[in-house]
Amino acid sequence: MSDRRTEELEAGTRSACPAPHATLRPILRASVQGNGVNGGGVHVHPDRWGEPLNAKPMSLPAMLKRHRKPKEYKLRGFVAMLFLCIVFLVGFAHVYYNQQVLQKAYFDRIRLNHLERVVRVYNAEGAELLRGELGRFLRATDKVYQCLHEDERKGAYCMEWMGRARLYLRYEEEGNFRCYHINWKALAHDVFPTDCFDLTSAGGSVSHWYGGGHAAGMRWPLEAGRVSWEPFLTGDSGRRDHQWGNVLKRFFISSKGVAITVNPRTPLHVAANQYNDGELCLQAKYDDFAFVRPTPSSAAWLNYTLCTVSTGNMRELHQHLSEKSLWDGLTEADVEIVNTLLTQPVWQIAPAEADLLTEQAILNYTEDVLSLGFLQHGEEANW
Image (cartoon, rainbow, N blue to C red; front, side):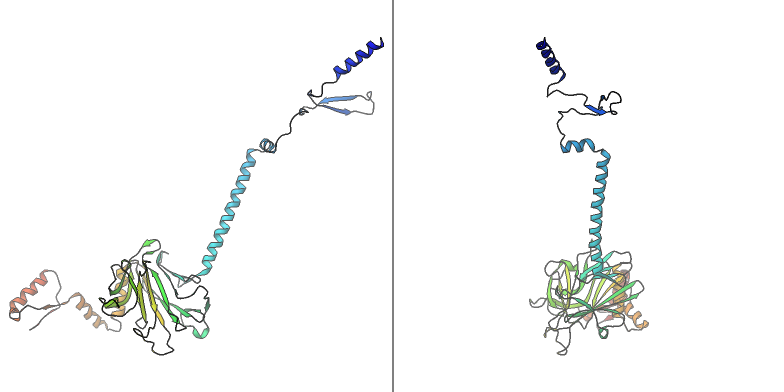
């Protein structure tokens, strides 16, 4: 009997205890209520949010994917984009600030970068008319300083590169015309002040230059030819040792309405598109041949003027500068006579033989000139 009882107890124990791999659903949570008030019983409550005991742990990406919401991704993306924009703006502001600090505006429409010595001339609308490089003879290590008080000039900005050169900038305005005077003074005999200007473009648009005079390698317009460094003096352009011809003028003008006029006292050397670089270069140099140094202590001066017109009209600027340079010092009556000679030329009759020059021939010639619409100021004949 006892053996039978023992077998029943063992069978009941095996049925009451599940196998180790069995799953318990739900997980039982035991809580002791009271101190044996209700019989000290233990009440077991199922956990609604429980998980199987034998469930595998979740990986980190799966957990992130499960717990992150779409709004969190949008917020993180917005913050990252905002950070990149801030970095870009700070970098751009730094570069732009450095560029602006290095350049200074002179007389409202001309800017000069002190480090690179790049000069830009603008019109009233802010469009670039001319770009060039001043002081090409200077070294990268040469530093610019403000001139001493005794070296300054009234109405001019003064900058000095110690022991090398001194630069003066001056401005004048007359109606629609603005002129900027640029004056270099060499502080050593081995210093040759040199400035170069772009012949091909200004402000992103094409420009053309004219002037200078007759030369062996000169073309029309100026940037189409090529002239190597030569003293700007008249000579025989047919010779190999001299490029400039017998008609020269220290005057250059562009289709953008900018003109360069070089002072006649400057020992001028000129190069135009020498290396196919599209540049017009001006240099002051005493070579003891074409330009002899007046005294042993005489310094080379590069003195020229940049002039612009508010309308941008090349013809208007040329006419204004021509009248100012050609007729300077003449009275109004003298100017009127000269203008009459230009607009109403003197016609000269030069027949092949003097016997053919009769009164009737002169009358016929005069009628032919008048019939073509030319105005007549006078006639001259070789009697």
